[in-house]
Length: 252
Image (cartoon, rainbow, N blue to C red; front, side):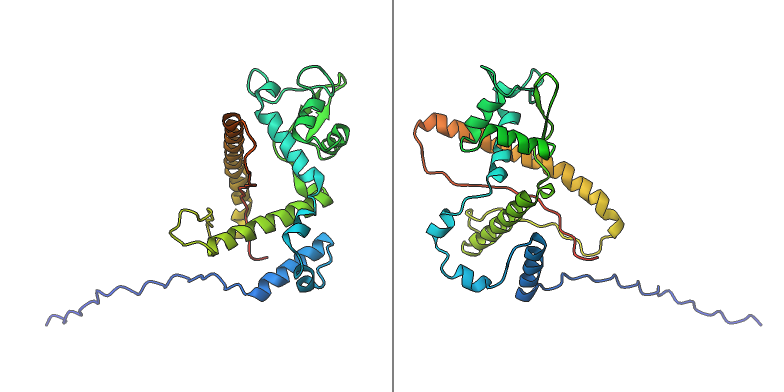
């Protein structure tokens, strides 16, 4: 007598539910805590924050000048990399002397940063490794931008300026309609389940593509600025604009 056949189940095992990662809600206390820690690392007195900003009006803000090297170094390096007069046949920044009749460091410094002594500026650039001088007195530039965190004063100014710019972007977008073309660009690529071993590769990727992106924006703004000044022939109201790229890692 044949054995009865057992009906085999065709139901497949339930697939393992994927891990769910949600972005942790950031509270006001989180932000204040991080700011206090950041200011502490910078050696800045953050005591009495509320009392210090109550009477902070536009006149007070305007009277506070930026750390001079922060803008000076950027202005000069940008001009050196973009001004045709200071480029060689291949379009690269040409080595220049401190004083000559044509395309000297002194002329470049006086034109881009007229309120800063050229020798002081050159000394600062040498100290951070942005330029070097050969035995014949020719000054060569080695970078388009400088590592600001190698200089404490420059690091403080850069950190505060970045925070202030980002806050202003968020405030502007909050005060304009979401569909309004007046919204300032602000996007974030977020991944909540990334292997920490991938961070070094991500850093390289952001540095490579971010640097190229920022340089293209810098070149575009410089060209537009020259064109508008040349076209108008008069000094029109101007604004300060900046584009930033950053990488944030939450975790140990």
